[in-house]
Amino acid sequence: MRIDETIAALERVAAREVGRGSEALARPAAGGLLAAARSLAAAAPDAAVFTGFFIPGAEPPAAETDGPLGAVQIAAALCLLGGRCRLVTDQPCAPVVEAAVAAAAPGLPVDVAPLRGYEEWAAALLPRYGRLTHLIACERVGPGVDGRPHNMRGEDIGAHTAPLDRLYTVGSAYRIGIGDGGNELGMGRLPADLIGRVVASGERIRCVVGADALLVGGTSNWAAAALVGALSLLRPEVPALRTLLAPAWSSDLLAAIVSAGAVDGIRRRPTLSVDGLDWPAYAEPLTEIADLVRAGR
Image (cartoon, rainbow, N blue to C red; front, side, top):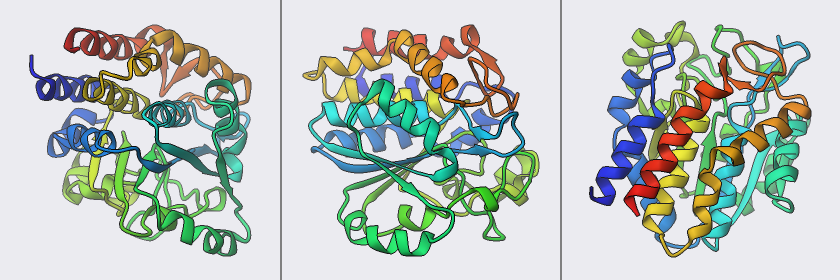
């Protein structure tokens, strides 16, 4: 199997259907994984990865397990490629994102946006972000047609969410979006009527911010793993990339962020699960991704 065919297979595995229409959403985004991986693998990137999806109705309220895990996985991969990377989140999600960094990528810088005083904070960072080569969003909610961010239940969560889309769209960087439900940064690349048909409350929650390349996953973490897998195939001289694909790596990081308070976005409580999937079901695509990369070397 050629590398491009293997990467297409990774893209399909990552989009495995879990009941929210990911396979339908992934069809018009096909090829996004190859495009994103080629862009990142071509040279040492200088990137920022946006993540953190706050669940205000959780017990207790916290960032969800989908997103930070994949974001740190991508950031660690870019550093192994010789690039530079930083994570970007906001105050409500910071405890979980910072715990993920401490567990898997110590020393990785994290920019934390305040909910109050955001404009001044962002203005100070605009020159730096304008020089970055890549801006990547991994399960980061973005503005809908009304300019407000919405969760999968159609609820406005703007009171708990900094408008990081303003940094995500700055400059001429190559933008990569990773999402699973239509309301994340990058999903504006998809036809609006498709999200409206496939996703519950899709017309209301769909994010209007697009990307140069879009990766759709059954969970966003799966799409992030597929991106790291594609990078491993394109840059075989960096064998350490494959260590990030071991399901045990994700299992350890999941345990670390749940200990820091991360919640399952579906169950809305701190459990060792992602989007309602307990570890055995969640790990299946991760194992398939690792096996495809191993066979495709």
